[in-house]
Image (cartoon, each protein chain N blue to C red):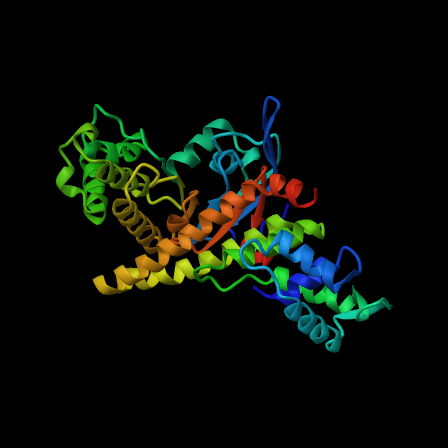
Length: 174
Length: 229
């Protein structure tokens, strides 16, 4: 999963401090793997260097300075591009897809569109495998079948998620 | 409307309601000769209604359907029936073979309805049954053959008139994986060899993988994924 894009997406709803970003990330996406502070700050400084975020304000307190980050227009374009690009069909990509769908819902984009685009990408792979299977020997058929069943499982997840988008929207924007 | 260049069958902005239920809410579609297009979408999304409208079985409330350059709405009932008999072939999930007839009589039936003499019709039917690898079932009745065999007989019957469009609604829905795949291979190979277009309604990705492209129907609206990307 792209942590940079996820943090950028979270910033779209308004400027936040690094600490708030970590908390929002952990709450929405980090159920089994919360972010380390170090990851947040190194990611933010990379995004800052690339012009995708800017410092919106600095609070001086008793401890270290607290920077508040805001997404730039280039950052919004970057998130947009990431969300619209289907993932390469492979095993265990659900966490990335889940993140994209939730971010789309949070930023009022069309989440069904992301799922449709991904389905199309999966079907493209399945067509290639089906064609190879038709022309191949039994070994080819068995190898392709294994890949096809995995892709099919992904697609079933996409369909179920599409059917649950309204529920998910209500849950994540609560 | 102007159908997409080269398309054999095209629909634009189809709307259809059954009482208060909206089945199609502005669906578009187009298919070229020799092309296999999968129509996908969740249950109740309107995919079967779209197929029924495209095949001239159910008239849409509004929107237009063009087949080979002619508006379906401009045809009389008799002309539409003739079109369905001569130019269109149909494969459904089940229940399509006449139980009292033998398999070869079932396959020959569309030709007989078009006026072909029995011998000629059954000869043509046997040729298609050979291609679908079910010629050994010619004397059996549908109740005596397996689901997969029956579905191959149904595919032979859909293709026997040399249709320009085959409408297949969940053609493998009642079959196991191996039989389903064989039916899809035989159906798409046969259709491609005769340059027939196939409108394939399915919710199964493995079946849709036999298509050239897919459109997705959701809440009565269609989305052409090839054009969307």
